[in-house]
View 1 (cartoon, one colour):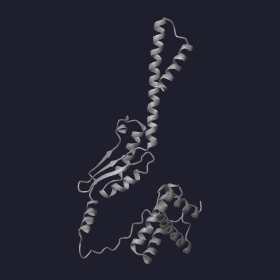
View 2: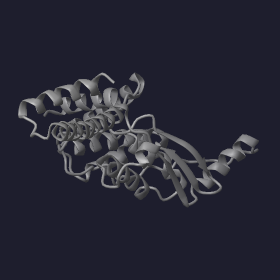
View 3: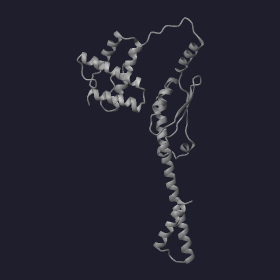
Length: 264
C-alpha cells in the first residue's frame, strides 16, 4: 500500500471504528501530513519505512518551531498512526513508541482557588497505587461453569485489564481498552475511590451474546424434554400392550411430542 492509502485507512479507522469527531480526525491527519511533508523536504524514506532515528530528528525540528503542547499533540498523533500500522502488519514496531512527551513549562499561580486545590489533590491521589478492583457482572454470567467459553473470555478480559493497572490513573485507560472487546457492551466504570485506591467496574456482555446463550439453553432444554417424553411414551405403550413398539409408532410418538412441546 502507498503512504496515501495508509493514511486514508487510518482516517477511516478513526472515523468508523473509534468514532472520533470530524475535527479530531482532521487534526490527526493534519499532523501526519505535516510529518509526511517533513520527510519529503529532507529526502527521507516513505512514511511507512522510516528508520528509528527519524523520530528524534523530527522531535528536534518540532521543538524549534512549536510550543511543548503542540509538539506533544503531534507526537501523540504519530504514535497512534504507527500503532495502527503495527496492528495492520505494515510495520513490526512503532518508531514513535520510545519518544517521550516534551515537558511543559508550568508556573505556579499567585493564588490558589478551591477548584485549583481540588484539582491538585486529585492529581496527587491519581499517583497512588491501586489496592482493589471490584468487577461486577450479571448473575447469569457468574453462574456459568468455569470452563464455559464466555466465562473464560471474561476472565481473560479482567486479567488483561488488571495487568495493565498499577496506579489510580491507569484504571480509566485500561477500562476503555477492555471495553473495545466485541463481547462487551454497556459496560461502565461505576466508581473510583481515590483515597482508598479502589474501583468498581461493571462488565456486561453484548445482547448478541445473551441471545446466543439463551438459544443454546433452549436447544438443550428441547433435547432434554424430547428424551424424557420419548422414554415415557415408549415405556407406556410397550407395558400396556406387552408388545415391542414398531418403528412407525415411534415416529408418530416423536411427531406428537414435538407438536406438544412447540405449542405449550
